[in-house]
Image 1 (cartoon, rainbow, N blue to C red):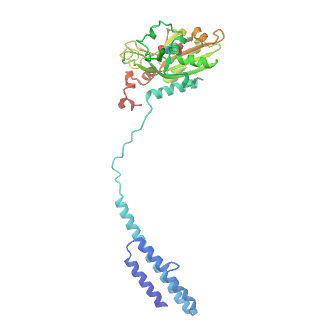
Image 2 (cartoon, rainbow, N blue to C red; image 1 turned 135 degrees about the vertical axis):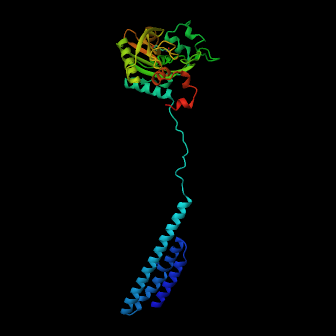
Image 3 (cartoon, rainbow, N blue to C red; image 1 turned 90 degrees about the vertical axis):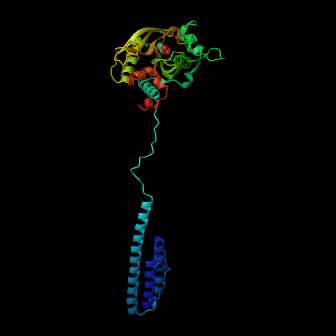
Length: 344
Ligand code: DAH
C-alpha cells in the first residue's frame, strides 16, 4: 500500500510538472485529490490494515496529500500571476491619452432669465397663467379691441403687426397683454398672475430691436389696489432681479389699457448712463410698461371698476437680460453663436 501511495504521488507530481495552465491544475486536483480521486480510493483500504500499519500508512497518506496540495497551490499561484500579467499587458490603457469631449447642453440665457423672473414673481405671490390664456397666434379682439386700443391706432397698422394671411382678424400677438383679457374672462378677482411668452412686431432690426422678442405680462386685480402697490411690487422686483440697487426711473407714459400709465427705465449698464449705441445715447434702457388697469378694460370683462381696481405691467425679457449681463446687442440672443451661448 505504501508503494501504491508513492506511485500515485510520483505520477501526480509529474503531472503537475507538465501542467501549463490553471485549468490543468484544476484537472489534476480532481483526478488525485477529490472525493472520487485516486487517493481516496486507496485510503478506503486503510481500514483493513493492522493498527500499527494504519498509523504509519495513514500518516504517510496525509503527508502525501498535504505535499500535493502545496505543489498544486504553488503552481496555481504561479499560473495565476502569469495569466494576470498577460491580461494586464494586453488590456493596457494609456491614461495619458486625452478623453473624448462630450459637450454639455445648456439652458438658453433667455430661458434662464425668464425662469428667474417667474420665480421672483412667484415669491411675491403671483402665479403663472395657464398657457391657453396666452396664445401666440391671437385675434385682434384680444390683442387690441378688449385692451381699449382704438381701431385707428397706429400700433394696429400692418407696419407694426403681423397679420395672418387669409384669416380675417388673426395676428401674431404684438404684446402679451391679451393674456390679461383671457384670464379676467375666466377668473374672478382677486387675480394675481403673470404670463410669459413670445411676441412679434414688424420692426427694423437693430441693436435694441428684433422682430420677435419675449415679454412677461403681469396683472393684479383686487379691492383697493393702488399705484403705490404697483410701484412697491416693481421696485421690489428690480431689487431682487439685479441683486443690488440699480438707478431706475418711473416715467409717465401712455397705454390705451392703463390710466395712469408709466414706463420704467434702468440705467444702461454698458455706459453707466453716459450714453452709447445700446441705449442710443440716452443712458437709459426702457424695460417695462405699466399702469392702473383702465376702467374700460375692467368693464369689458364684466368686472365692476367701482369695486375692484388693478395694476398691470409688461416687461421685456431681452432688455432685462442685456442689462444684467452687459449684452450690447439683442441680435446675439437669436443667431445661435456658440461662443456667445457658452458663456452662460
Ligand atoms: N403691452 C405693452 C407693450 O408691449 C407693455 C405694457 C404696458 C403692458 C402697460 C401692460 C401695461 O400690462 O399695463 O409695450
